[in-house]
Length: 124
Image 1 (cartoon, helix red, strand yellow):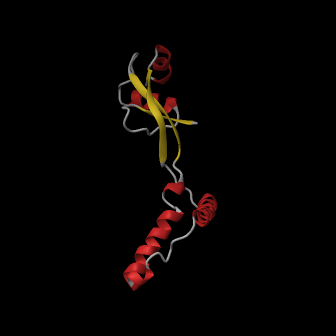
Image 2: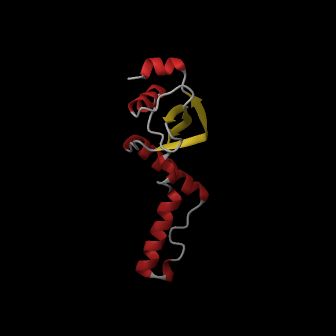
Image 3: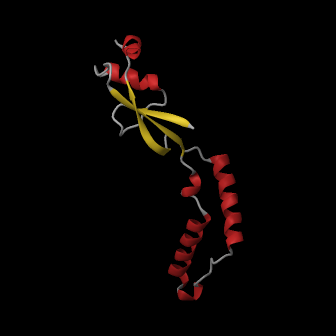
């Protein structure tokens, strides 16, 4: 699991604790006992946004708009067929999509404290 760091427990802009400590130093806030934060993260899965269920639902809405009720259940497929399409979409997304700077946080943040050693290393 990767880690992200924050100086305010809201914006996790750093992937290295040293960068968070340097940011505190740059802002004149690096002092022994000052809190900064760590949280586990992983890349957000594209499957949450690119799914067979959503594609089929969108297609069903479009055909209903175009044709009307006579197209009811035009995109109704078995769970196996939907799972097959999800597998194809996941493979395609893994190969072609690069979601950058989009993290999914896992768990709760942990409070870390600036030490005297941190101050000595990062103070300007």
